Length: 141
Image (spheres, rainbow, N blue to C red):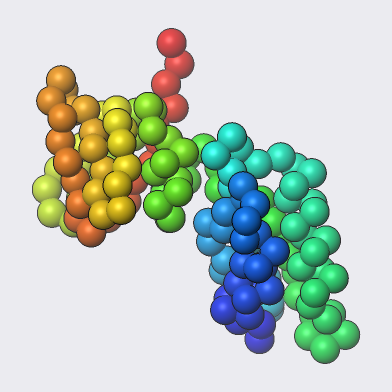
């Protein structure tokens, strides 16, 4: 079975220095590989196709067959990497903490180890280690 580490090792050098960042690699039984990528401005279908072609060219189907899906995480997917927080500065997010009730507010800033949110008119700093899940809230004005 192809490993997530193998896919990462192939893809990370390709993405290094580009605006595209890797969000997640998963490999399910039957070698079903799913790669999630993004950019601060959002990723295009053409960019996903380019990454898919690159991976197909770098991996040998004759040695081990696989199914490959390359896509963006989607607007309602939980954040998996710090750059997703950076991408959503200025937006409303919902954060579930390891302990306590979920919080909803505007994401103001992202640091190396914490985020700053405006919740009900008050700024609150939250350690990334305290966050169980976080995702953007889609609002229609």
